[in-house]
Image 1 (cartoon, rainbow, N blue to C red):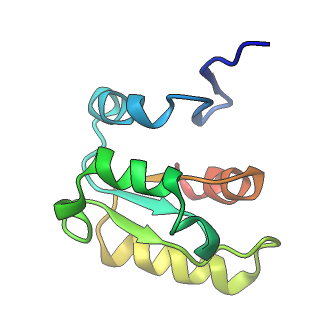
Image 2 (cartoon, rainbow, N blue to C red):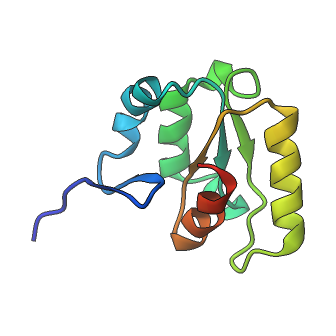
Length: 113
């Protein structure tokens, strides 16, 4: 069984699968994204996937040109939304990148990802 990169829009562009992180910079450029907020949970912050994301976005640029909200709960609660929205505003973010499972995507979609 082979795995492939999958993309769909409904209406938010979504990309997932092996190699998705490598596509990020090109897609950000195409969409005009310059200051994304990365939304995830505490458990993913120490993973290889997150380290790859950091490498793709530029470790030196963290908290300068891209930002992180790592407080999403497995079953998101109201403070998750309020805290992330405040982080989005404070950082002058222009997009949301969700990294993680379905809850991260569900959380990010109505927030303008």
